[in-house]
Length: 260
Ligand SMILES: NC(=O)c1ccc[n+]([C@@H]2O[C@H](COP(=O)([O-])OP(=O)(O)OC[C@H]3O[C@@H](n4cnc5c(N)ncnc54)[C@H](OP(=O)(O)O)[C@@H]3O)[C@@H](O)[C@H]2O)c1
Figure (spheres, protein in one colour):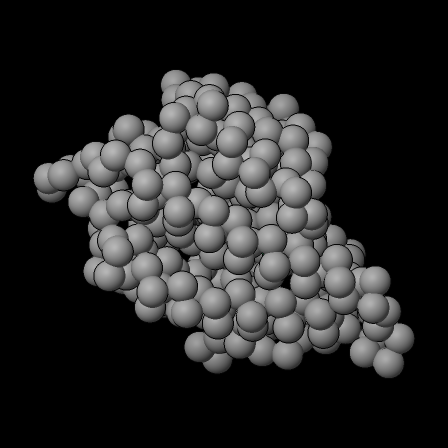
């Protein structure tokens, strides 16, 4: 049910952090993986991918720019011939009080976290529908494709000092449902995955502020921050045939943060 044998996945923002953990987990489950980021994946990411024995390639692209989309799709097709799974994970955050928030920061956050993921999903869905439909039977998804948008607990809450990020992540959860409604009848699953507080570069300023760090831990029922690997299993589930009847859901993996 969980095998990704023969599937081709694009994972954006896979050079480190949550995207890297997802790319490794998808390869471990059998997928060939196209890793997208501006900088090269960290050496430990490459060595973990090598250990899976699966094919992988890094494509350098700036996903704040719409021009990156044909490059990402075209390079993945050149290398692997098809696209079965898209994980829209690349994301950035800028922490500034609302009263000082700049238009420049708003634009780069919304472009990277919402606009480009939306149009990359559109490009990948077009490819999923155009390509030969393979994979029937119990061991392989009978669906035509899987799109997973990495949302956030800030797809549900307001957060502090990150209004553009909150807007983008609420928007991404919304378009996840909108896309699911149109693509479910065509055999593509679209779902979101919302991590809680995970130890990555994205949250470094919170981790290094003892007051914020401890306040966050105190509110997490699991009693600890998440690690990138904590998020990866849910991504394999959403990429696999185990989730064929799931559409438009935002699956939270947050140590219980939102349940509280
Ligand atoms: N960490 C958390 O607690 C948390 C919680 C909820 C949601 N999330 C979400 O999870 C996702 C991954 O975050 P993370 O915590 O793993 O952050 P991270 O460690 O900072 O990694 C971000 C990844 O996105 C890539 N990226 C950023 N801007 C890009 C651009 N313009 N073009 C191409 N790639 C770009 C980065 O690669 P390059 O810099 O090499 O380009 C990197 O691979 C994001 O969508 C984030 O919002 C994180």
